[in-house]
Structures are given as C-alpha cells and as structure tokens.
Length: 226
Ligand SMILES: *Cc1c(COP(=O)(O)O)cnc(C)c1O
Image 1 (cartoon, rainbow, N blue to C red):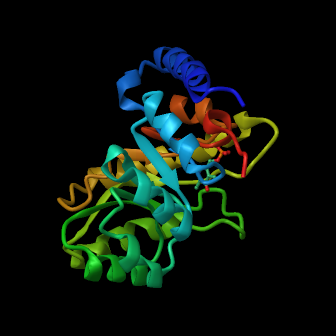
Image 2: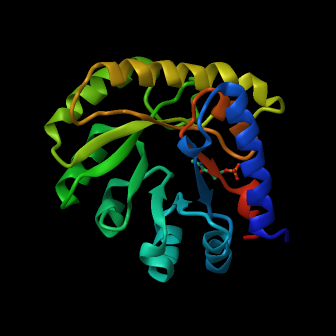
C-alpha cells in the first residue's frame, strides 16, 4: 500500500494548483481523511503524515478509532446519524456533517453540553437514494434550528453522485455554494454557515474550484483495505 504521506503530498499539490487557478487560499481548504475503510493503524499513519481531521461514517467505526486516538485528531462524523446513537458519540464529535432532520437536531440539542458545529446535508442532485434535504427545504429548516441552543450551523454538506466524468458534478457543487451564500446572507447568529463540505476522491478538484472548504477523502488518501 502506498504511504499516506505520498498520497497526501500528491493531493496537496493538486489543491495548491487548483486553488491558485480559482484565486483561493489553500489554507482555506481542510482535508478530512475518511478512515472508514481502513484500520486504526492506518488512521494513525495519516495523523503522522500531517492530517488533522479524521472522518468516520458509522457509530462502531467511529468509537473504535476514537478510543485509540482521542484528542490527537479533530473528529468529523460524516455518515447518516441515527438519533439513538447520538448519546454515545456526541461528546467526542467535533463536527457533524449529516444534519438532515429536525428529530436529529432535537436529539443532538438534548444530549450536547456545549455548542456542536453542524453541516446541514443537502441533496443537490435530487437523486432518490441520497440523504439530505431538498434544496428548497434548507432555508426554513435552518430557521427552525433557532430553537436549539446547542446547534450551530457551520456550513452545508453534499455528496455528489458518482459519475465517470467529475466535471458533471460542477453544477451541483455550484448550487451548494450559492445556497451557502444565501444562508450566510441571512445573518443568523447561530448559523454563520461559512463552510462547504463537498468533494471526495474522484471529484475534489472540481469541489475546490467551486469553493469547498472541507473535502472528504478516503480511497485516494488512505486507501480501502477493509
Ligand atoms: C466514504 C465517504 C467519503 C470518502 O469517499 P472516497 O470516495 O473513498 O474518497 C466521503 N464522504 C462520505 C459521506 C463518505 O461516506
């Protein structure tokens, strides 16, 4: 397996080039290493290579890695989150990327002891199989979150469909950026909505061009050995 360090250097070089082309600052782009397909050892290798952010999409995988790694990483929960699992994890998660319903917001708010930065997940492609709110529902959903004092809307997140030509995802990423701009423009104190979590192994370059601040990379960075 290729060393994480080697993959990371390649991805960083790509990001630097794309950021320059797009007139963006490369420091504004956070790489989340998605470790759901790999061992705890491989996750630790990512941290040694200079990764700060780790992402997991399941309760069990998250807790197993968290137990070993704890505060040496910033933790992102990127998968669909069952309300009944919230209490086991909420004190260990730094960012939730999959806030997509009021019942989940309510449970997070009830269990949290401090502010939890969340990304509201949006289904920009409109595909039936994708999680997330429809574009048209997002603004009223976020306005309703005012009731939950522990929830902060840090940004918006989406998962683009897997396509052979990543260029096809561009309009979707752009749509999410425009939506982010609109929500940010509302000036809600609990919803600064500055961040865009979008882009994975096959489409992160397009996502960065379209404004991603958090890219979630598994296969291309740490591989998929499990
Ligand atoms: C698995 C996963 C990723 C990473 O996917 P890769 O294609 O392996 O980079 C990113 N985001 C979410 C929500 C995921 O579940």
